[in-house]
Length: 103
Image 1 (cartoon, one colour):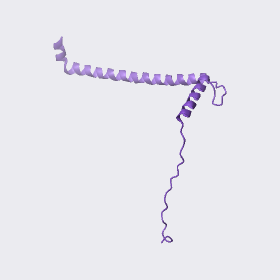
Image 2 (cartoon, rainbow, N blue to C red):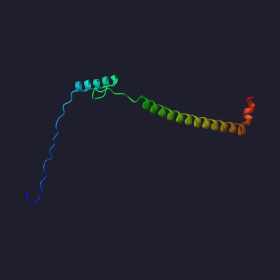
Image 3 (cartoon, one colour):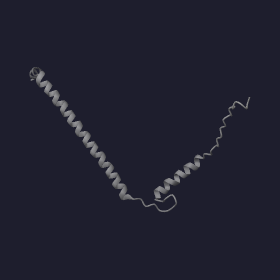
Image 4 (cartoon, one colour):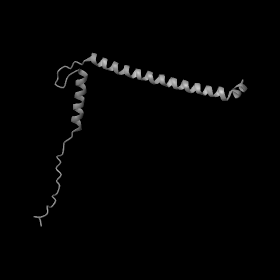
C-alpha cells in the first residue's frame, strides 16, 4: 500500500534553546549608558557629536509645531467668534423683546 499512496511524515520541531543571562544584559546596558555619558564610541574611540546639526534639527521641529499651534488657535478663535455672532444675531432678531424686558 505504501507504494501507491504517500504516507504523511511526522513534522519535527527543532528548536535550539537560547541562554539568557539578565545580569549580563544589565551590565551591557550600563556599559552602553556610561560610554554615551563619557562620549565614547562603541569601539572605545571618542565620539564627537554634531551639536550644530542637532540643535538646528530640534529648532526646525519646534518651529513647525509652533506654526501648527498658532494656526489651530486662530481657527478656534474664529469659530468661537462666528458662533457668538450667530447667537447674538438670533437673540437680537427673535428675542429682542425678552432682552428689552430685562433692562
